[in-house]
Image 1 (cartoon, protein in one colour):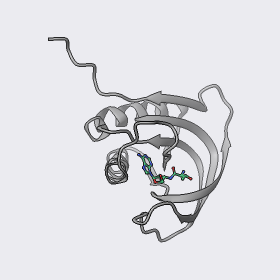
Image 2 (cartoon, helix red, strand yellow; image 1 turned 45 degrees about the vertical axis):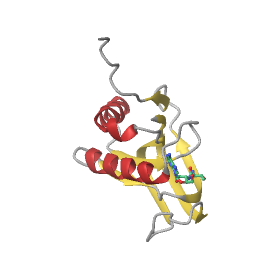
Image 3 (cartoon, helix red, strand yellow; image 1 turned 180 degrees about the vertical axis):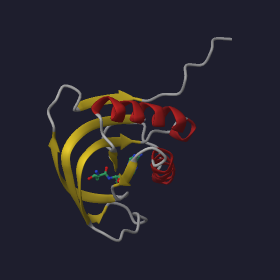
Amino acid sequence: MRVLFIHADYIEYEAKSKAMKDAEEIIEKKERYEECLVPFISVEEGDSSILDRAVVEIEDVAKKVGAERIVLYPYAHLSNKLASPGEAMKVLKELEKMLSEKYEVHRAPFGWYKSFVISCKGHPLSELSKEIRGEAKEEE
Ligand SMILES: C[C@@H](O)[C@H](N)C(=O)N[C@H]1[C@@H](O)[C@H](n2cnc3c(N)ncnc32)O[C@@H]1CO
């Protein structure tokens, strides 16, 4: 999983058009969230087996920047080993559920072309990127 984290004063996005036939059905096309951590996430093949690690890493950044609101943003531009849309959707929904135990979590619509405006806070930890992998296997 490749993640770009932006700690933001706000993010505002609008779903414009479907980028795939089975794009997620959505109610609201436009959303704005204040004071949030926005992980732009490229889900990679096999990421359904590293969900616990992803939750730890995202919570670690949220704690470091003092964010209480997380807006998960599906972003298929950070990796050349993308998971299929079906697996990616599953992983993002599961992440949303697991993170919701401790944070207010929202998720931008999956499978849509979206316009967005984000206001990055600009403090030293307001822009971070992580490659989240499984635990290194013990050498036999
Ligand atoms: C397009 C651009 O403006 C927009 N921002 C976009 O990326 N849209 C992506 C994600 O919402 C989702 N998507 C599909 N596969 C994946 C994946 N492996 N990981 C994350 N999202 C995915 O499907 C859309 C088309 O790839």
